[in-house]
Image 1 (cartoon, protein in one colour):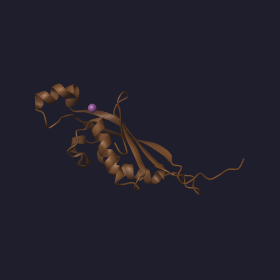
Image 2: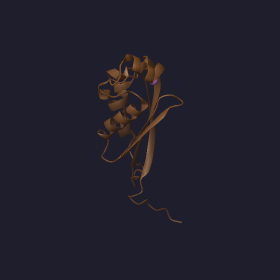
Image 3: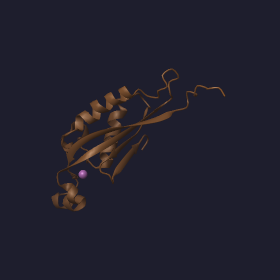
Length: 143
Ligand code: NI
């Protein structure tokens, strides 16, 4: 059996994990202090998480290198545009999250759109934010 080069249309999804630690406090400007406290419970008080972020990119494996995406390019973009901005900060003070309610949903969406502008067009497929061992939020291209 001969080894054949995959067709260019065959894309591989590659997911890489990153980590940061940050403080946050859930609050919506749509509600007053008492309603916010009732809605978010203990999450309305300042507290922190050790977050994990999974970034998925897709591409056709390059026939010469065998790589679908250069991990150094991905690492540089994620470290500069996301991790470097949020690590050991209060998320409400981070410029890229201005106006974002810092739920896992809000973070996944904001990180996706930040990275979409940093990576080659059409390569970013999804961003997952894992806030705790129990909570995992996924934002996909086209969502
Ligand atoms: Ni929290």
